[in-house]
Image 1 (tube, rainbow, N blue to C red):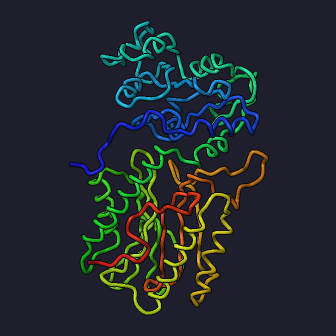
Image 2: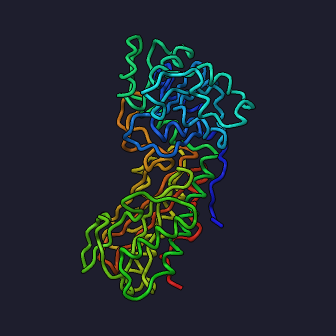
Image 3: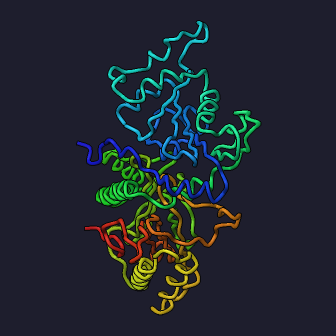
Amino acid sequence: MIPFPPRVLPKQMCNIERLVDALTMRNLDGVVVSSPYNTYYLSGFKGIAHKSDEPRPYAVVLSRHQPDHPILVVADYYVGSLISQPTWIEDIRAFRAVMLPLDLPAQDGDLERFLPRGIDELPWAGNLRAHYANNIAQSCREAMADLGLSSGRVAFDDLRFGHQLEMETIEVVDGYDPMMYARCVKTDAEIELLKRATTVNEQAICRSIKTWGPGMMWQDFNHEYHKSVIELGGFVRDPGAMVWGNPCGGDPAVTLHSRLDDFVMEPGMNILFDCHGTLDLYCWDGGKTWVVDGDATGDAKQYANATADAATAVMEAMRPGVTISDLQRVGRAVYRTNGVAGADDVLIFFHGLGLSHMELEQFSADGVPNHDWQLEANMVVPLHILYPGDEHHRIWIEEVVRVTPDGGEPFFGWGLDPIITV
C-alpha cells in the first residue's frame, strides 16, 4: 500500500479574499489565469498530460466585482476529470480541442463523447453544454463578457495569452504579482498539504540513508532517494531532487548539483540534503546535514551546534512584520556570540513555498521591488542556513516554517542536529 496515496482534495484551497485585495490595490477589474499552477490554485483542477510550454488547455476567469462567480474553462477532453476531483467553481465551460477530427464537420453532440455517465447529476452539467465553444479564446471572451470584463483593466498570468484574445476594449496587465500576493499567505488546506509533502521528504531521506553501504556512489544514492519518493507516493522532476552539490577533495565552494557529479560517499563525509519534490502539486523542500556513517566531531561539531542555535533563534523571530534582513542579523549574531569564526561567510536565506519555491510578489502594488520582504502570518517560509566548508566541515539546515504570531512552527519532525546513521 502506498503510504501517501492520491486522495480527493478540498473543493477550495485558494485565498480568494486576499486575491480580491490584490486586484483592488492594483485597480484591476479581474484576472484570467491559464498557467497550470494558478489554474489549480483557483479551481483545484489539475490536468494530466499537459506540459508547461504547450498551448493552454484551461483557464479561470475571475472578476473582483463578482468573486463568488468565477468561471473555469477546460478543453472538452478534461471535463471528466472534474467528476473525481470536485471544484468550488459552479460555472464550468468547455471548448473543442485537439482530439476532435478536422476532416469531418463539427457536430452538435461532439461534447457528449467526453461526458461520463452520471454527469447530469452535477449542477454545472447543463451550463456546460450551453457554452461549448470552438476554441479557448472564444470561451474566455464569452466568460469575460458574462462577468463584465469586456472592458477595464484585466490581469493575465500569461501576457501572451491575454494579447491573443485580441480584446481592444481591455487593458492587458501582468497578473504575476497579484497572484503571488494571494498565494504567499496559505489557507488551512494548503498548510496541511505542505505538512504532508514535508513528511514525504523526511521519510524519503531517512529511507535513503538506510541504503548506504561502503563504496556507494553519489549517483546511486540519488537514485535510492528517487525510488523512496515514488514508493511513498510523491514525485520528483527531471533532472533530479537533490539540489546541493557536495564538492570533495577539500573544496569549500558552494555549488549546486549538476546531475553529472559523482563520487564515493566516504564515512565521515558531510552530505547536505536539500531535496525538492511534490505531493498533490504542493512542494516539499529542505533537509539537513548527514554525517555518513558517523557523527560531527571537533570543529564540525562546534559548527553544527552553532547552526542549530542560529536556526532556533531565527525561528523564534519568524513573526509577522519581521523582514528578511532582520532574520539574517538574528542568525548571524548567534555565530558571533558562540565564538564561531566566519559568521559573515554564513549563508542565511529565505523564500516562499507552496505550488512553487517562491510565491512572493516581485513588486508591490505601488511598484516597489520586494527584495527585503516582510513576513506575514500563515506564510510558509523555508529557513536556509549554510555554514560553508569542505566535505568534513560544512553544515546545513533547511527547515520549512509556518509563520505565526508566536514564532515559526517547524514542519520537519527530526530536530536541528545533523542526522546520525544508526
